[in-house]
Length: 422
Image (cartoon, rainbow, N blue to C red; front, side, top):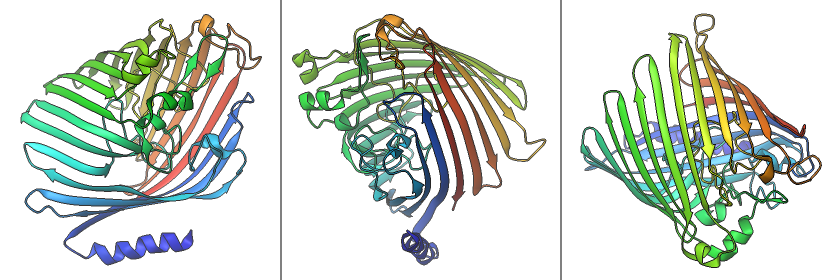
């Protein structure tokens, strides 16, 4: 591991003085500790060091190229139980190796009218997202295009073939696999709770995602419309409207998913549900922001794909714990977030508090603790996040979060990340 870090910084020093290249990256030290109150997810912890080195060429006639190398190395972890920290490779397969990855490798074109990238890259869309919240960001093998025909309008199009993501990927976060292989899939009929990744993959095979999007933004208004077509699996259409000014922020959202292609023909599984939500927030003063959010899920017998490829556009969820431990058919989620800027006390210090209440339909959930049907009618999720930016390069983040179901089943998360950017 030491030799690998030394190689990173040796390359950095050699290239930094070359006017043809722009060099950037970061180094992270992290400790993660998860505790689960059931037998399905084992308690797990990990101490991790990671490094990312990016080399980007200067533009020549608006054309440029970029490569990024990432290494994630375990300092200390229980190799038999660490899989649920979602850091090392093959999280569902029990292989817990550290890894090094060519995370980005693409050719780009950038002008005032359009942006085009071809190759491995990080992305930011509502459902396909880099999600750089943990040790290493998600990366995708894709062709992505943005057009800006007007100042207020951006058009999006692309095709995503494969994904690597240590947190969001269901199959192997440390290597690139097809989008259908990497999808998080959750299903419950009220008697059995499953993650049928392999069963769905056996039906659809290796498949990618095509997407189209459009956004209009002017003054305080922003409108988005997206269509994500997961080939042979399902189609997602999402619409969202935001209103934001200096003191007030509000939004409404609606999305719908329907099965297509091989998954629809097989009739073994359905993807047929709607998600809708609203959010309202505002600045109490210059240092305090309060946000109320709601997300509802329709009452449809369906596979669920929340956060499958790093995107979590839904307005209400628990901090850092997402949607694990329960099934959201006919669910309503209410969340309160309070953000505090404490820079008057300590420069660069911010705190975020979050609480979410999950109003569940017990006909579709399992009592995880007793493994019995017709289980939990509600779940509490809560968290506190502290961010401290010492300067533009050095920062420190601590997250303490947890959840508790009606049955008493609990889980807790502790995560700390020290990050240095260059």
